[in-house]
Image 1 (cartoon, rainbow, N blue to C red):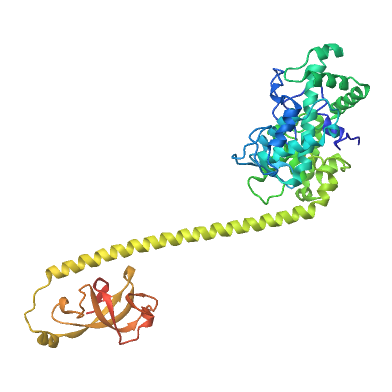
Image 2 (cartoon, one colour):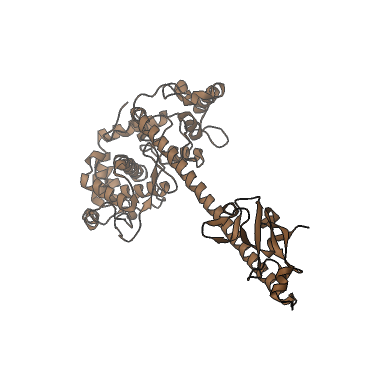
Length: 473
C-alpha cells in the first residue's frame, strides 16, 4: 500500500483529496468544525509568522501553563480535561472541543506554503504542542498521535482551498489574482505554484481515484469510531467492545440500513456469521467475522477500529491493554468499597441521630414523671423509724427500650409507691438484681467498668428508672 511522507495511506487521504468536502464525510477521531461558505479565512491568520512564533516565547518553560486561545496563554485559567482510549484516541465529553481546537491550530499555525508535513519546521510543531499542553492536560505519550492528527487537519485545510478556490479558475494567473480572504498573498502564490506541478496533479488524481473506489463508508459522522465505542459501553469502564461490534455500529444507520448496496451485502454476511456463532466476535483480527468477510488486514489502519490503530500496534499492545483493564477493574472495586463504606457511615449517623432523639425524649418523659410524682406525693407524718419497719420486699421486672424484660429483682417498698426504692433521686429505684435475662443491656447509671447488666452479680443493687420498672403481683 502506498503511503505519504507522514506514514498515512492513500486510503486515509481520500477524504482530504476529494473535489468537494462533504459535511457527512466521516472522521474517526471527529472532524474539526469547517468554516462556512463565506470563504473568509481571516480567523486563521496569525498576523505574521513572527507573531505566531513569538507566542511560544510568551509561554512558560513548563508545559503545564494553560492557553486561553490558540495563540495566547493565561496562567490563571485552569486546564481543560480530555481523555484517551487504549489506542490513544480522544474520547469523552471534552473530545469534540479538543479535535476542533486541533483543527484551528492546524489552520492558524501551519503555513500552506509547504507541500508535505515533514517540510513544516519543527519549531512550528513544537509551538503547537506547547499550545495544546497549555490548553489541555495531555500526556507527552500522546504527542506523536496528536501531531499526526494535526497533519491530517492541515492537509484537509489545503484540500478545502483547492476545492473552493484553486479549481474555480483555469490558469494560475487567475488563481493568484483571487486570493481567499484571510490568506497571505505570498503564501497563496506559493500554494498555487505547488499545486500546479505535475507531481501534485498526479497525486490528486490518485486520491480522487481512491476516493471513488471506496465502497464501505461508515455512518458515525463526526462522532468517530473511538467515541462510538465509548457510547456502546454505556458508561461501563471495564466493558470491552469487539472489532465486529464496532464495525457494525459504524457502518449501519440507526434503522440498520447501509449507505450503499455493496457494503450492505457484506454487512449482512457479517451479521449472519455472528448470528450463527455469537462467540466469533471475540476471535482475533485474522479470524473474526469482519476478517472472514473482508479478508485479513495487511498494512495500515485496522478496519473498523479508527484512524491510527495499526495491526502490529494493536497486537503488541495487548498485554498493556489487558493490564490496564485489570487496573480499571481494581479501581472500580475500590470505588465500590468506598461507596459501600460511605453508605455504612451514613446509616450509622442516622442511627446515632435516632438514638439521640430517643434519649432526649426519654429524658423529657423522666423529667415530666418526676415532676408529677413530686406534685402528687402525700405527706407521711410517721417517724422514719416506724416507716422503715413498714418496708417490705416486692418483686419487679426491669424493662428496656421496646418493653423487653432484661432482668428481674426486688426492691424495698412501703405502703405507697413513694416509699419504694429509698433513693434520693425520685426518678429511679434502687433494685436488688436476682436474674439477668439480657447481659448486653446497658445500665442507665454506669459506674466505671460496670456498664452493662452482664457486669452485675446476682444480689447486687443497681439504679433503674421508675418508668422502666414493672411490679409483679
